[in-house]
Image 1 (cartoon, rainbow, N blue to C red):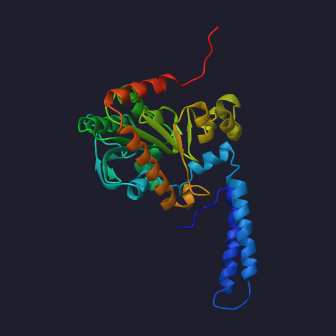
Image 2 (cartoon, rainbow, N blue to C red):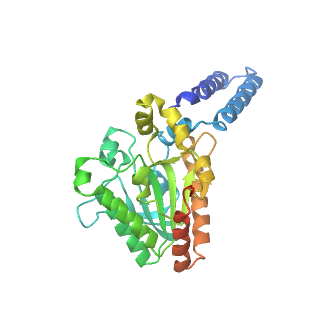
Image 3 (tube, rainbow, N blue to C red):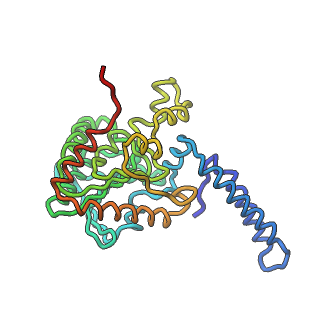
Length: 319
């Protein structure tokens, strides 16, 4: 699948097109283009290093939102085995934007709760653009309680612009459903690993993000508000989203510095949207490492460390 380049990736795409044309022209003939091919390949390599090692916060947001980036169900197919989806919250209905169920990773049984987006209009309508309703959070909690009952670790794959803010969601108490998840996840006596794989938007992400290990992929973001929303409030116009992204400190390096995440999952050069298999292998390796570490802790140790971890977040001063 040819990946649509982002604006800052277009110089790389143009060079790669030149390289492909040169190879096609030389195919099956002895035109002596090896030196020219080598020069272009070297130039592409240098340009990739220059661009991807110096990404701005806004450019990382664009990568996190790329429709070719692996979504939760992609990772469930690439990292996990035997995924069995569980439907419904037993109160109102099912929420397709939040697939949850049981699976194995590296042969280890786990429960998985996720956010799922769509790649086209039909999929996005089905998945509600990755924005969950109250029943999605209640379904996730039902699955997580089931995991705790049977001693299964929980893996949460977070990728949402935020919880759904519509009238129906408000009528069914979206804020209350997220608040209950925050409280109950703090008390679950089983290891929890949460990974922000794309967008980590506000309370919508927090609703499945209370964990013993909160991880973030290299080009994902985690923020109390979207850059566009922040720009509309502070600058009165969404065009200031790049400045807002910088101010929000929402990228993986900033979040590590602030102590809001516990680790960064590396991505293949250029981002996960260019290499699904490579990204999945790195994600699987990191999840398994963290599950192995947490498995050594007793339930009481997990709960105490989880509580202390979230209580220590934030910076304040006392007069």
